[in-house]
Image 1 (cartoon, rainbow, N blue to C red):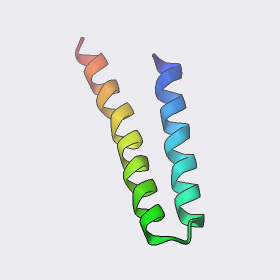
Image 2 (cartoon, rainbow, N blue to C red):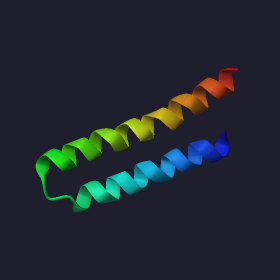
Image 3 (cartoon, rainbow, N blue to C red):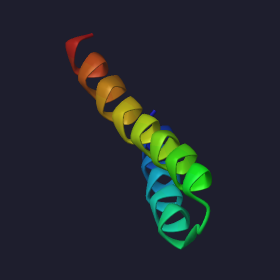
Length: 52
């Protein structure tokens, strides 16, 4: 599970980098939402796994 969380964190960081390079506003917004989702998900999963 830790490896999966790390992979999601890496993907979120890459998405943020790509978003910064994007020139189209719609693309930037799409990538921002995706990075936000990937950033939130590992944290949420990590918190849930601690409760279990």
